[in-house]
Image (cartoon, rainbow, N blue to C red; front, side, top):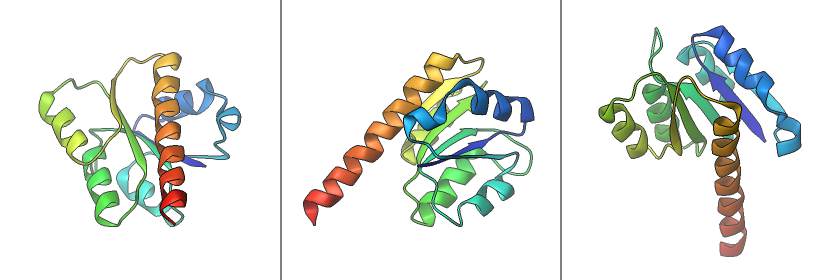
Length: 132
């Protein structure tokens, strides 16, 4: 499984990368990007889970999820942000984001959301296999 962390704050990317033992969750590759342009370039191979800030210079996390959906990427999106604005939450959910986590966040909160994403991915794989 591949995971992408997108935030213009390099410390946030490093923190999320370090606070969880990703390999124990079956995540074998953790990418980091500090803007939307760099994040899009990582999608040359599909990304399973994206943890993204909403507001960043040069493009928002909402623009990233919109772009991903338009390009038929089924990545699970978890948004991290310091904004509790309903319009952001509503737009994120309209694009099928899994969750919206407010900063500051704790390890257990991120881990719980990632576990939900993994469960959704596994469920989707089981459904696809069953349909075939």
